Amino acid sequence: MSVTEMFSYIQGFLSADQDVREDIRKVVQTLEQTAREILTVLQSVHQPSGFKEIPSKCVKARELFCSVRTQIADLKTKFPVEQYYRFHEHWRFVLQRLAFLAAFVVYLETETLVTREEVAQILGIEVVREKGFHLDVEDYLAGVLIMASELSRLAVNSVTAGDYNRPLRISNFINELDSGFRLLNLKNDPLRKRYDGLKYDVKKIEEVVYDLSIRGLAKESESAGDK
Image (cartoon, rainbow, N blue to C red; front, side, top):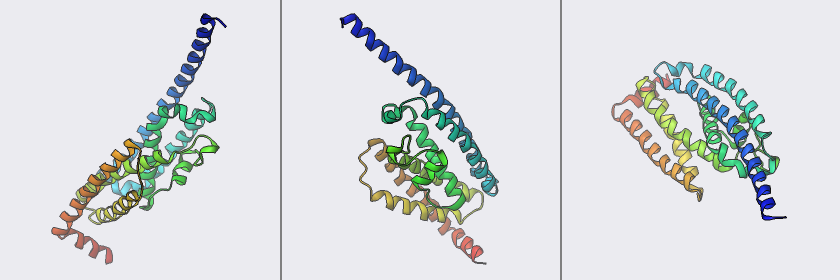
């Protein structure tokens, strides 16, 4: 093979690779758009009147996740299954965002932490790497940490809406989450930086709870709940 033939072959390989990446980008763009639509639906829970609409907003979000599953199914056809990590950077961010949205929906519904398996089911993907397109552990954890930040905001807005008991429940949940992350030896730099942000979320929520306590609102809320 001559030098010219060799480089012609390489160019063919590069062109084919670029075509694959372009196909992936197009599908990822549709996923990003759907993720924005889900976020828009869920953002309304932060409004004073939004707390009463939480059940209906979660139902709407789950309907949109049907589109996510269809789009991910399309994404799976754009590259060889064994090359997941070769192209992972293309969908890593949106997958973390979708993991956050799934976690937020489950929290709003049950006030519990979503499992990695539940997120994978909601997105229509696998948990086990060998089975193909899957939810990487670090992507799941990143999504959970994004949710923690969203909950700190929800705690503040709960007070504005007159729901004084919700920040206490969020505080307990976030503290448990923080304890769980302390058990992990995080070597992924972006993930470790996100975890550093959790410390600020914990502090922010503690300040909300403290403010409620010194104003006597937390006790009033608990008494009202007992009645």
